[in-house]
Amino acid sequence: MNERQGFSVAGIPTIFLCILLGMVSVALWIETARSGVGYLGLAGALLVALNLLALKGFFQVAPNEGQVLQLFGKYAGTVRIEGLRWTNPFCTRRRVSLRVRNFESGKLKVNDSDGNPIEIASVVVWQVIDTAEAVFCVDDYENFVTIQSESALRQMAQNYPYDSHDDGNPALRSHGEVINNHLRDEIQARLDKAGVRVVEARISHLAYAQEIAQAMLQRQQASAIVAARERIVDGAVGMVAMALDKLRKEGVVELDEERKAAMVSNLLVVLCGDRATQPVVNAGTLYGG
Image 1 (spheres, rainbow, N blue to C red):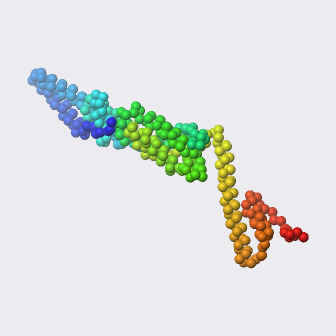
Image 2 (spheres, one colour; image 1 turned 45 degrees about the vertical axis):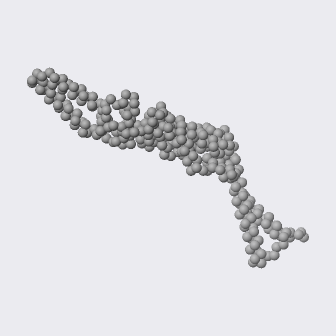
Image 3 (tube, rainbow, N blue to C red; image 1 turned 90 degrees about the horizontal axis):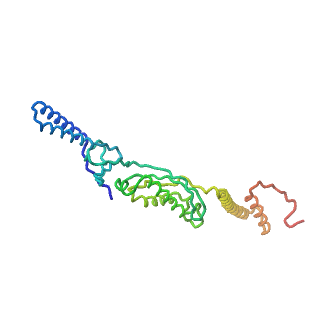
């Protein structure tokens, strides 16, 4: 079932028509009282009844709103034209907001692709684009959006690890754009049948579950320390090589292989150590004596 335009006319001209019918019915009653002709009074009463019935057909449509019409249970179309409108007075009407809405899911506890328990939540921005599907294809489209969004979030979180690995595959913590796009597509696939368009979906909360949070924090700290040490060593080796090369080019001192090894050892200790070094004065030589 897809949305289609429902029958409605401008309300202001119809109001004047109703006023005109009311004036005619009053005139008929006056004429009946003056002349005593009964059928004129009956015609006036019928006009009043029709006028009262017609008044039930007036309704208002606000900006970014649709009024879903049903005639004796059958879908009769949707009116999106703003302002005062008039339609068949036997039609029932249901207001559906077309405005952009958002909600934040609760914190869900799921397992990532590595089996680690994590807590995750998302913010979903959505709007109704097909009022007929929203009203008639699902029982409660607002509740449907909430439940299906959380279901899609669970499904998406199980496809990625929390932290990225060396293989370069996306991870929940490091590839925000990829994850958010996947989440939006997962939610949209579930909400197509409800006439809803997902404008945006993004992760609003991401953390390890409490029972493993401390252990994972220690692992992250250890990984950071190892990575920092690797950079320090790379830099230190480069500086030692540069120092030896400059000493050789400028002829400051001639070093044999054993002295080069000792110098390299001392420089690496100074450059890679995490504490301040203390100078030691060597009164002898490397060869004793």
